[in-house]
Length: 460
Image 1: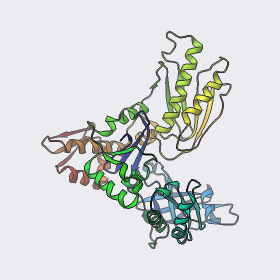
Image 2 (image 1 turned 135 degrees about the vertical axis):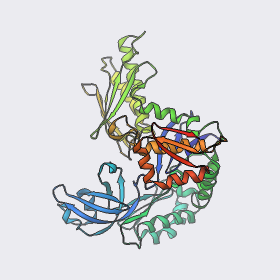
Image 3 (image 1 turned 90 degrees about the vertical axis):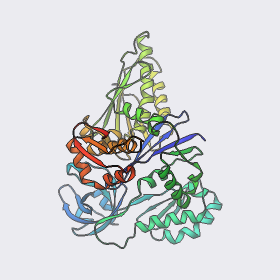
């Protein structure tokens, strides 16, 4: 069976990568526990403060987390006209909200939330708000007929959208998922705190793309657990699940680690000898296209076109692989050849073909710039791995990477306890999250020691 996706279990965070038809990693996803990232989680919240100057509401999410709701999102709570935040909510009000975007919470900022939660399951999507039942246009009439009587009672509690995948499993399986997700939007608990979140394994399985390719899971235990969950809840992927049996870690075997290193590098080399660099700012992302060594042995006009065409394909790939969203400005090399701009636009269209989120772009401006708008899904790869766009590893990322290495080393035949050496910020983060240290000890059955110093994992 051709492998279409690989899943790497971890401590606190799972990762998955989709492979293209040539076996090259085309997209990368992180699946976090709520303690690491609460994005998409549902919380019972209480409004603690109204900022009338900026028309913002701040909420206590429990668990030591703070949410922030803009006026635009707060307007979803009212039917009539609302001109200011106080028209929508009052201090002390209890709400059910969903975290919709990662923030620099470690720097004292709040998480962006919406009062209209939306949960994406594998077969259905449920949303708070008006009652309705919608079916994907790709579902066959026979499937719609079988699902309607099972889902209509649930749709009375909120919006229920049935995805096309629902047509390949038994109606009762679809109804079971819809029941679970709808219940998450109508909890009985009235105290601020977490109400619902998918586990990292559940997130990874829901993200399995359509198709008949295999889904290789690293590790016998995680594979067995995934099969058990898929058998009960998502049977359409059950026969596609397989254990990874390659040499070395799966992400290294399939070139994902190499692709991550390339993406985080200052220069991304192109086949012709040119290169691109990607710089993210709070407002937009800038991609600079450079000639590099591409002029050697080529006419200037040909070299410019070749580098720009390669850069267009690289931009499409890296926006998808690094999950870069929002406004992107690409500074292509100026070209004067007739038809060059048209060829470049065709290359860009081809590069964005098949992207899982909407992408739009302008033509080439008189300054050689192309503006691209790509729907933002969450933190980009660089934002996950580096703080403040500086080449400084985030403590969370460094800690998780150390956990991966320690887990692999601890499962080897070599004797000794595990010694993790890390900077103080990383050790402090691990100290504040003892569940991950305990999980590592349980999985490796080895003594665990921490030291301050350069990042390293050893046995002693």
